[in-house]
Amino acid sequence: MEAARQGYELSTDPRLLAGDFDAADNVGFADQGGGTRNRYAIGAETRVPILSNLTANIGARWDRYNAVRNASHASYMTGLEYRPLDNLLLRGTYATSFRAPDMHYTYARASSQSTRITDQYLCQKDGSTYPDCGLNTPYTHNVLVTRQGSTQLDYEKGHSFTYGAVWNALDNLSLSVDYWYIFLKGEIQDISADDELSIERACAFGPNGALPPTAGDCAFVKTRIHRDASGQLLSVEQGPINKGGQRNGGIDASLKYKIETPNWGNFNLGMDYTLSTKYQTEARAGEPWVDERFDHVIHRLRGTVEWQYGPWTATVLGTRQNGLKSGHYSNCLPLSDGFIPRYSDCTDPLTGLSNGRVWHKGAPPIFYNASVGYAFNEKARINLYVTDVFNKADVRDNYSQDYAWTWFNIYNQLGRQYSLEFAYKFD
Image 1 (tube, rainbow, N blue to C red):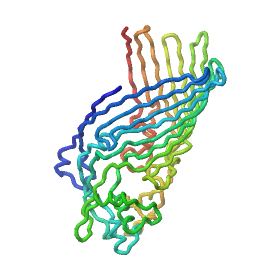
Image 2 (cartoon, rainbow, N blue to C red):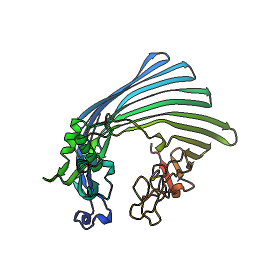
Image 3 (spheres, rainbow, N blue to C red):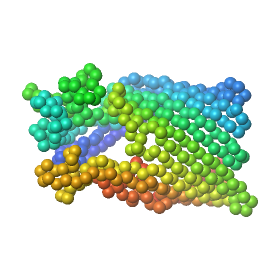
Image 4 (tube, rainbow, N blue to C red):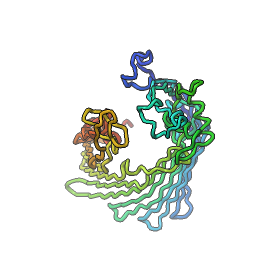
């Protein structure tokens, strides 16, 4: 049984709240918020022997958060372990899951900024097709965009299953292979002002080949898009909603091998491999699933060598994964004057300058971590850790066009790090 109370407060630079910066400073929303919530949970898990070589694992829990649309949620898991041979284990699990909204999705206070937006509805109403309404038309201008949290968000929900096998081939050698699949729905993300304007246009004129909006979608954006009596766009409210979903699947494989020597200590060798076989996203419920597998890490290989000799231990961990596309992949390259065109032909219509597109993909990154430890006795121990031994944080993506200039989802941004730990156990 659990009970918890959480709270946070996000304070913003008062100069930003006072309007001391303008749009040219590119500071974005004056994000602020704060609040508290209570959480209660109760759960149970048990192992049930069915046969001498067959065991079931069963668990269930109930959680309740306030400030969520459906305040309580129940989830459960089931699993089976079967040993047809003493050294072979077959296993499988199925589980449901949920995740409560982050507190800032719930308690973000209203903040606003002036944003350049294309009025898709008015553009098509006047006889143009939306894609033809470029940035240099009378339908694109600065509009006040406001963002705030919502206490009407639901839980993100999902289910998952795994099945696989573990084979203890020898006393010092074991192998395992597992397939896993995860399905998530109702993921919480911000719906942008552009997305809301796109839904408004589709409600009035049709979806232009995309999934038509529902009556609920149309009613929702109507409350968030504000126009004057002549139909001119005044402001748009954006913020978090329960949107679409995600489907992930993959295979995990591992090998563990132990070598014992009389004079040189013991060596534990390990190798783990993960292959992503599915990575699909759904922008909103009912829309076609989009395959994004090649935009993420597809495979990862990790190798570990651990040495134990008396009071000494040392470990080296290496990780290799596939390289990723540039953060600006398929977009236009900068022109000779520095301008980056946003048009399909990558040409600036004002100057006539043109350039190609970014097709850059990074090389597969390899990282190494290392540690060494010494035990003074059974109670006291000292450890030295080095993360990112060869300082891979400086690998650059020269086309990313953001502050990191690298693949922030695979590089740690910090580079080589050292840490020293002293551990002591009290009886």
